Structures are given as C-alpha cells and as structure tokens.
Image (cartoon, rainbow, N blue to C red; front, side):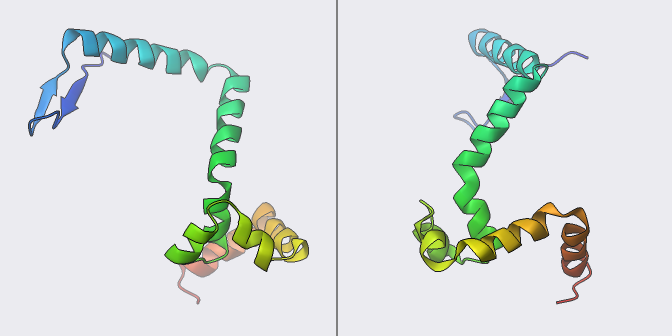
Length: 113
C-alpha cells in the first residue's frame, strides 16, 4: 500500500497533493505515530493523558448536564459541589460492570425510556 497525501481546502477549495516539504513532514509524523503505537507504555500514557484532559466532559455527559452546566463543570467544580462521593461511586459501578453497562446500552438502543 502506498500513501499519497493530499490536503483539502488549504487555502483554496478542493483536494491537492501535498507540497514536497509538507509531504515529507507528514510522512515523518506518520512514521513516528506508527512506531509509537507499537509500544504499549506509550499508548497507555497517551490514553491516560486523554482521559485526564477530558474527565470533566465525560462526567458531565454521564450526569446529563446541559451546555451551561458542562461549561460550569469544565474544571470539575460543579460535580464536587453537587454530587457526594457515594452517588459517583454507584455511577462508577454501573459503568464498570459489563452487565450493568450492557443493560444501560440496551435500554438506550431499544428506546426503552
């Protein structure tokens, strides 16, 4: 397989082959990423960083916050003020347990609510 890198709408509409310098940079970046995913420690570290950066968004989503509440919870303060530790631990158990998670997914996927 050969990768032929293109850019789209940069700055004009339509797709065009990358310029040589941009293509070389793209290929180096792709090679670095390909090598990185071979290392389990690197993948785990990147996953943990992603989770840390997005934890408040995920909690707001799970707790049903609207756009305003999600903004207020951007630093996690809303969850700490409104929810005690025990309800959050119960929520964790529902998400963590495969049977509970599957039941929740079925309820939503089959429009049972």
